[in-house]
Length: 298
Image (cartoon, rainbow, N blue to C red; front, side):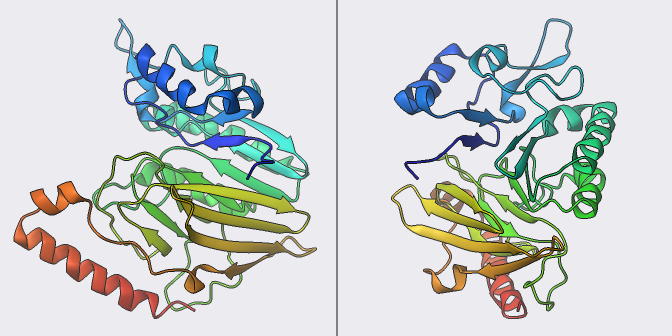
């Protein structure tokens, strides 16, 4: 997308929060693009460290590296914020700080309600690191989901972009067997752009899944249409959908993924080596159950 207006990064830009050489590599990789295209970043768990007093803080590199809105709650400067751009409200939430401290979670939730209640825009996109619905078995941010998802649904959030789980999943919270044509809540996306991979859980909420695959996304909004594309690092389109919003604010989903190549669901190589036979069989069973469940989705 050569005419992109800005780029969004959903946390874990680096591995070690205050490692200067890792930040140097991150900025070197972006090169001149970082000097021409605004970066809108949200911190993940790897951007956090414990200071001399044992208190968790965002990386010392965070605020000197980025120029982000300072309209969030006090103490969450340039990590929790929002901005409006051509009819869309973009909101960054600091899930790491929230999961470390329930009072911070409550503060962000109260702030989010205010930001969404006074939202004059047609579209709303939320970005945070920890998923509302995880893509990996054994990882479940239930406190985060219980606090935030009802707010998203009540106030008509359209798209939630997330990371953390090192696999790919896109879907929504609707019962199996019901039509997905008119979503009653946001579309959730979990993605991974780096080479570190986990095994995928293949949960019920997913309409499109991906394992052991590096991906990036493009989102374009034109009046009443939001078009989403996901690509592999070699440029192959892996996922695609369009949301159309009517005059009442109701969305219609056109899922274009079924016409694309089959999902990539192979285990990462290191998991194939370290998994015991019973674990491999469990994954195969999970894969077959996932394919069967997808036949129920309309």
